[in-house]
Amino acid sequence: MKLGIFDSGLGGLLMTRAVQAHMPDLDIVYLGDTLRLPYGNRSETSIFEFTKRAIDFLFAQDCALVIIACNTASATALRKLQQEYLPKAHPGRNVLGVIVPTLEAAIDKGFDKLGLIATNYTVNSNVFHEELTKISPDIKFDQQATPLLVPLIENGGDLWVDDVLRHYLAPLKTSGVECLLLGCTHYSLLKDKIKTIVGDGVTLLCQDEIIPAKLENYLARHPEYSDKISRNGLAQFYVSDVTPHYRAAAEKIYGQAIEIEKVEL
Image 1 (cartoon, rainbow, N blue to C red):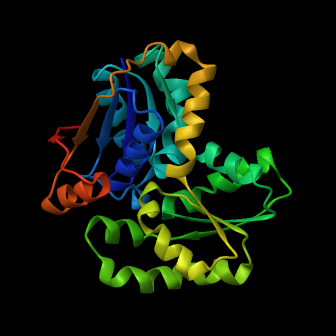
Image 2: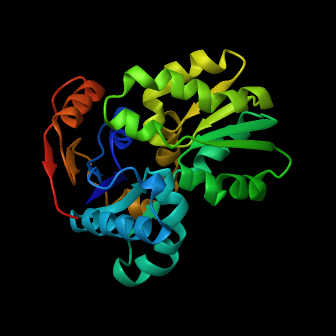
């Protein structure tokens, strides 16, 4: 069996590369729902349905465990999938999200005020703040919706992204956050630009730098999944739509051409 990683687009490739670098022996199947991105401006019903289809596809590829790398999908679908859908449709399998592990990493570093940039849906759901309150209610929290970033990243909008980032990040700089959570896997592609804008006084936490170690720890504690995942260092890449820009960006992320197969979801 294999480890599945699901995201709406390019950000999931960063996550997959990071997991491969941390645990190179794992057999991994990546799925990007590039046909329907960005998820952040979709309805709750649509996001859940898209995520369910993606999970069904990955389990059909013999995945024992799936990481929902998409924060919007994690915010919308994770609990319902875990509590209602999986026990009936895929008993013995599991899905993991990225929101709580990201908050745990920030809390472990001892910051008093956290900031978040994320999609419209993730921010409006308030899921990061709600989960933070459960874990560490005394930490202050501020968040900013950044809906233009994913479309710019996915469509080669480098010419405009700096001005957009400065606009989005200004309120968080004013509020004095000590640590900025990049609450979308896509945003790791912009970490250098973001760091330049917010300055050295703000620590960035990127999920591709957090999740691999968290996953390794989870697998060590859950042999019921770890023991099922084969370890031949193989990786398969699937997307629901593929464009020349996506192939070029994927090659840039991996430093080499990778075989990407288009599938119907």
